[in-house]
Length: 521
Image (tube, rainbow, N blue to C red; front, side, top):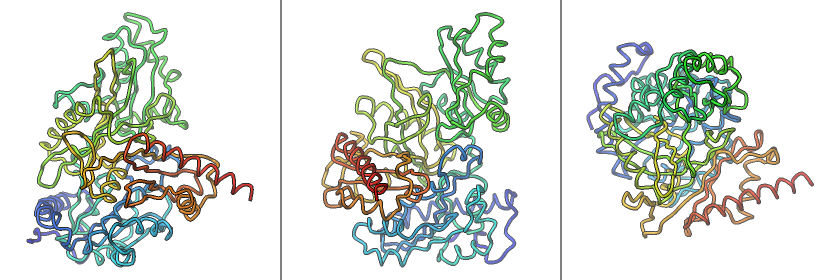
């Protein structure tokens, strides 16, 4: 395979971050990625190296709203399943070292590969830095660590970098490592903001809530809210969203109850905003929300009402050859004061509307592919039923991996199946349909003090551990957050939706009983 020109840097200095030289090198790296994708990716025996830097490169103020957020780096430990390919090497970088027991847990899930063989091809590196700085920035601040990563890569022409979301930081890291980035060019990041999402939905010709985007501050938001109410006299409430809010935590709801009609409406909204906004994040305040809005901008949208309402999502991929595809659908489990915070999901989405949202997602994916988007992204909807009809309002594009990424990829790695576009189901090679119930937010104070080893013991004793022969059982993630934060991620795989939900309920009972027994001891 021909190595792209000007992609290797054996010595410093590297191109300055965000400079034109860095962008030129990055473009050459990305241009060569298609060759790697077409020549290396199809062959499971081909030597390759995957560098995983699971940085949540998002506004720190937004991440502070999520308990145990630094453990979310562990959600990408599903990539250890890539070691099932016998000549694949994995370099996994974290802020703090991952507990050996957690690594053992994932390696023992590998189908068909002895864990000792996989371990020899796994390089774990850590920054030993628990600060709030994004992981990628921590890596960039440690040139010796970068050199260790580069030594572990081997041939850069058969290596790539994967991450949670791609920003200018990840672009700089890809250049300094001399490898391609399997993610969207950060220059296209605006397409994944709340404002960019609304524009893409219009271009794709799909339904979205009435509202306004590209708002600069709360004065703009007040004017947009008043205009929205003027267009929809019966509107009860609306949502005010930060352009780069994460997991629904950057949203707030405004009630129009008691709003006047006519010329005084905008003044009333402006005066009522500080008291009437109800935030999804429990720690949010008016002063902080208004400052964040002024910094990153945002949107206003009509609240979508219906006699029955769900929140499905579509997961898509644009591969390095530029081909868009829908790879899964889910129904999201949402919580928070007004039901906008992501808690988990079920796969697949309800069969009543699965095909409709698949087709809408495909149209959006086509628009994004034409704009040069690469890698994984999700599209969230609010679906409402009135009588026998469903309407699907596109809400946002998450131009990154998300809460539905690791459950679905883990399902694929464990069972060797594939998504069937025709039915929207996932089928194993034998044709068996599989379903799952997954949660990022199984949280209880009762779980404080349970260690990763305790968790494994509980799963084994209660016969919950995933079994490759039956394709049924429970896989855990966010394990490192359990002892300190009482928080855990759970993926329950089964041959029916009801059985998957039952497995989750059995897991909760098992953890609760074990926690009570521990307190007695």
